[in-house]
Image (cartoon, rainbow, N blue to C red; front, side):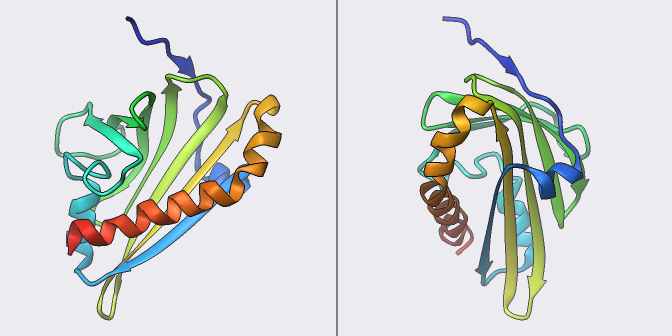
Length: 162
């Protein structure tokens, strides 16, 4: 069966602050920033440490940079195609979703910031999106669950990097 794709509006940095739905999770790990960055850009990034992410496929060749693309599948059937508009190697990467296999979203973006700390590194992960208006009430009710799931996925990074 052929996948049906829904086009999303591309985003830029202003959307990271102004999106109607915004979630931020921060996790400290006891490994250097370089090791945390490597976990975020590995071939099995997120899949190996998140029960929600069932598949990740980089669709651009290495070395990665601005314009890099990937496909990420959640819970086995919700897939998004993403394009990175920022890639500060070793420190920060930001993508805008350009297509999704499910209707209901107008815009989606994620920002990953890796900072060195005195005893390792910190990942600050921001997810923002704008749904179609009909979904807004349901998603507002789900806010606590969505925030909890994001924090759980971010904490899973600890199991990946040790």
